[in-house]
Length: 456
Ligand code: ASP
Image 1: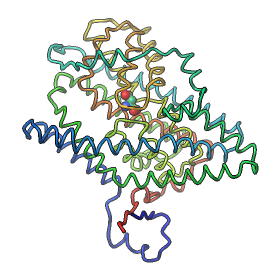
Image 2: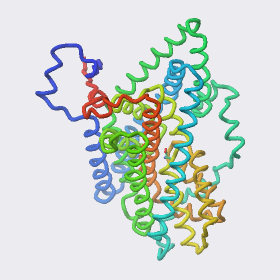
Image 3: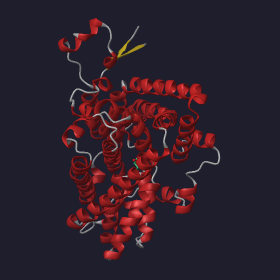
Image 4: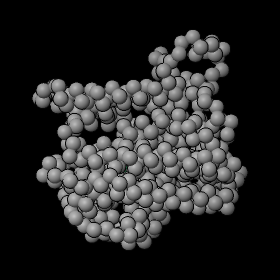
């Protein structure tokens, strides 16, 4: 199998081809797969009779294997890609002062946007009142709820901070523990820069390995539409729409909060702090959002996010390779929005009054919970218990929303990774590390969309 990258086309025979035969880009293919997957899932849920063929062969067979296989392929890239690209980024930026400025700015933006997200959620929820007039007995309670909550262990802030320093970096790499991996990689990169020629061989090893990982990302993305189709088919075949009905107001509140945060807060940030066209950002980023929506995991989206910011928006990889994995680990605006709405929903359902002090507490704890939420499916529900505890809400509320959380998990993950990309654009632009011409070029990075696979 041979992979050809259109951006790097050198052969004259290729240059005229795109004009004659317009191929669908990756973004369009992912979208078509997403819609078809939803339709297929709904058809399976309502029209195909239960039984061996539907459940074992398709839903838990073909759809599950292809969907999970695709997620695993993307996850396979994460640790080596993050490690190598942070080492290379730190080694080429070199001075710790610049790295420190980027780090502090990124953290401040991540924390502030999450706090704003919770405030948006609390406002929307208080306007829609999702927990008023809901018949509790009609809600489907997820039986695995108590199990999942039981697994949640309380980790103190001090332990979380100390956990950033790995006692054994190999162990952190092996278990995919992002913060210690980022810490160690930054350290290695800085020292490569300090040692200069003495560490030349190691430096070029990491650069070459980084190129290999980028090429692997492009190759794997070729099969993304199949993965997305199967993931969506399985999800919708399993849940259908019945469970949503009593929860409609809750779902509308969460989705409303997500849309407002994405289309208003992020767009203002891009226009004001990055001075770039927010619409152009959305157009170029929508395929990454669709990918996060289908997989419900920020972590697996890291490679595609870095690739898209680099090729389509001209964001220096030395910035994004650090800010994107960091964001996928600690910056979860979408999750914080779900948590804000869940608090108001449960308080209304159980008649617990919330005042200004409770609201301020929710903003603080949901922001912290977002830092503690790992970028994998459903973890936001587990860290929600910390937010509920802080204002004395019954944990039964979590069991009630678990039944329909999968769809909201998909939507909030799309917002989680958009927040990472928006902050990365702001930090890169302010630090002079974004090529504005690439950002403004609507055709930039078509190669992310057009990796051509030729069977030989
Ligand atoms: N699925 C989310 C993510 O990966 C985390 C969550 O909210 O459960 O970003």
